[in-house]
Length: 411
Image (tube, rainbow, N blue to C red):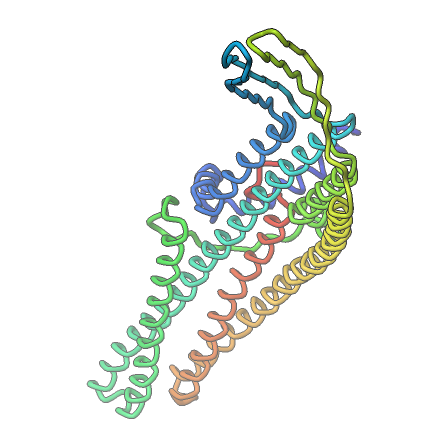
């Protein structure tokens, strides 16, 4: 029983994703399409750059310096001028004071972590865009299907009414009224088909490597969030790459500030110096230690880095508030969109029944054609609203899954 109790919450999270796969592209194709995006490729390059910078900081900025002086000394003497070959050589290197190397490694690691988190966030933003494009395509297709169904229905009615007019069983004015509605339905069908083509073109333009199915998937019934809103909000905020990246940047700034404070004590340079004068008559071997004397410049740099670190911590707090607010809005919208779809579904059922009764009354001669056309027009408008609400509800739910990293994310 304990094992079942532990597995149940996981199944509650997996079930909505499995249902969504009926009308979403294959996850492997999605992963490939996301990775192929230029923005993702750029972020991957920045991760490589951050890794190289981290290695450079770990090694340190100081390198071995070699200096050589070659000269000829000419000395005037009683017995004639004398010339001596002389040289001076020095080999040295600056060394970081204890603690600076550890700070440099911290700076590099925080920078690499921030770059990796920004890469994850770019992937997340691309996943959002893909969801919007894909569901926009599905929405446009649903509306186009409804428009085609209305045009086809009125076309059939027009043919039947035309035969009745020819037989003298119906008035010409009824056919004229039906022609008006049929012409409007044809215009709506053309517009809807254009919107569907535009939505597909936008999807193909943004994600050229993603193969699209020949038949557009249909959203039959939107899913429902498996947990309460607070749980989803906490999951979105807790897994936000934007917050984590901002905090990593702040941590890097803290390390940079500590490094700047440590740099107020400059690094010493230790060199080995060799002298060879007067043709070797004078020789010297010495140790040279030198270092700059820090002043107000280094102190000002340390103050600047400390202020920058404080600012980045404030930025991370602001980012957390923004993500919290956005998460609340996203989850609230998903709940509202589902409620709206359920209301539209009830309205569609009521309108379908009312239209059936009005049509029956028109067929029996109890009601004029205009009443049925009005009822049919209202029914088709409600059907369009229901189709749009159905896809919008599913898109809002899937947005929660994407933002909470339950869909189209590795973790």
